[in-house]
Figure 1 (cartoon, helix red, strand yellow):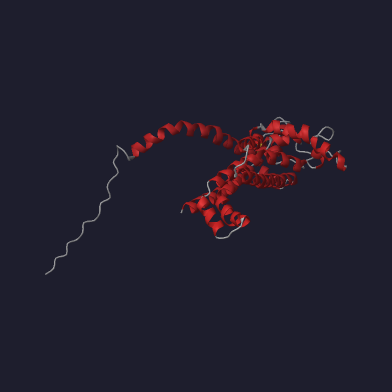
Figure 2 (tube, rainbow, N blue to C red):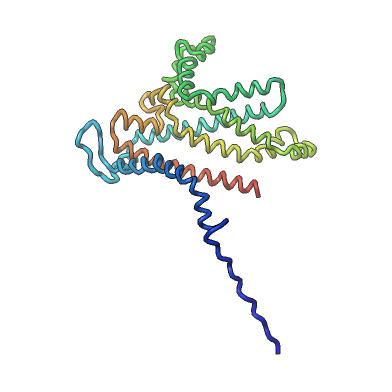
Length: 312
């Protein structure tokens, strides 16, 4: 007769209540982060909750006693406002154009700086300088020194060709702001892509050249796939910052003529601090924040997926 011995069931070791790896130890390690977390909640989430509360009110400071609860009526007016739709389109065009052209210029500058030549350090410092200038100072520089119709350098250079009397800011307001933003953000994209270029494995490049691949083929088949995550990171970070552009528009065009160069932050500022319409401006702010969170979350997931795929 055969006796079968049953294997005793495995017992999962109980996590100790104290000591390394315990739950109490985890809370002890997280305790130094609590003040920063509380401070972040106070300065970010509480104002957003107040904004949501104000967005449910009909409140115009010009009319005392007009404050009353209207529910989602402000949101309905936001989505039916033709100016809001035009400003939203301006925001998309300004952000996408500035980010894309900044990345193209940054990639070109990075390719130039990726090779050794005399004075490379000095040239790199000069190319980084625009990103270090205060945005307000940069906007004033472009408005008064370059785009001025009478004393601007652009008209001075173009005057021999018969185009020296153009008022660039009034004629092309959105394009003028975009050019100033591209000038300021191209160095940031250059630094990102230059870091990606310098992290390329040289043995892969040498192997591609030995196999007979030309310069353009190596760039297309080896360099661009390697730079993909750096380019995606630059596009997302640039879009997150540039969608909040306010100072360049305020200093250069004041959103005009009309709303031709206004973006969403500047339009919200106009409705809140020039039109004194607290309810609708708060509703616009909530809509913009929710839309930005959705787009940013989607873009960041794509980036994390790209980084995880590269590591695997």
